[in-house]
Image (cartoon, rainbow, N blue to C red; front, side, top):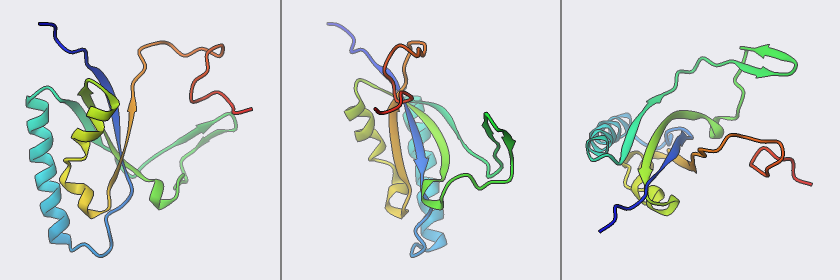
Length: 129
């Protein structure tokens, strides 16, 4: 019997807590999240990730700016994690189990490419014509 092939998927935690959620409910969801997350690491379904601080820098051709915010509140990225799964659908199904989703946090999941970038290959960085 062959072992299923897995890939790594970047999970970005986006958004902010619902204003209508009580702090105690949010704190409980956070505690449940970390218990769930650590169990997924033990099962090999997640690799370690991290919360992100509020400090940031924006680097562009014009230079470096540290006087953000650089995105609207609804676009805030609060952290990132790596899911190990057989498909994007399987990664999304696993992420859908997260206890914090009930309180306004959303996840964006993207497959990680092993291939080097190239200006000659169409990617998400290629301008739409």
